[in-house]
Length: 368
Image (cartoon, helix red, strand yellow):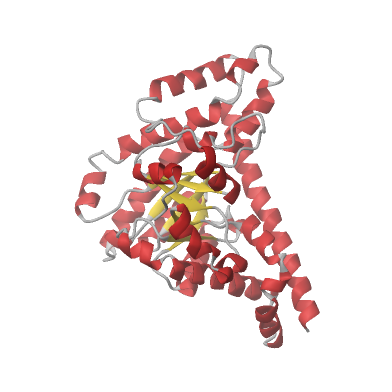
């Protein structure tokens, strides 16, 4: 494990460090394995944008693309083959972490086709297919927290599939996600699955909240004083909800049956506004039983100059709620903020997926 004092302190505070990136190059070069030993990285997340960027580097995938082209594979089948291969190999690299942490960490996430974000039935079908295709116990299938995604989360968990719920922006939706998780575990237990083997995280997006609200504050007189406060307050309120739900009477029988709680995962932790410290979404969100999934730049910045002060989340709910009360008082429509962020989040991943399909289509054509 790393001797870097910042990464060591973060891990000891109960924050699991996951890398928000994956590519064939990271796997084949040994970089991913090095991050485990040198940077305390204990998991990996991927998304359509990450894979679109990875597969744009054709040299890393040429051999496999030629093989698939010779077999007459379709674009969709080729994308599935390439992405599941990367995730499967990454899962193997993290297998020791998975086993040594009792399945808490060592997880690798793969997202369902984002074009299915509003289709419950097809999301469930694809989630189960991805689980079977990767065939590794430390996989987590990512499902977006849209209204249609909520029942898909429950039904996927009920099949014994571990789930990373993505694109959560509001505490209200987060509560619905936790309810979907509990229902899924209850059904999985009834279906005869060993629920101690099912893992889940709830990916609560951080920096995008500040980006959207700061933009709106710039148009309001007196809004400057609230700039940069919303995202951290939002995440801290989410953590308070997590503590409430996972100490509830409903949770206790599941816990007694070996279930692991669905941990909050801080996503989108790369800072978008250069006026802010590049480690602010790490420093200000330290709490036990959380995950912080970091782009490599944020990971390096954290190792180099994070200003860690121990737990910066528990006991902050009242102050965080005050931030939201003040935002509402000066005219920020928070419901609209979260609706916009969810819609844009889905659209961004859909766009990346289309770019990914186009890239692979061109690679297949060149390989023929």
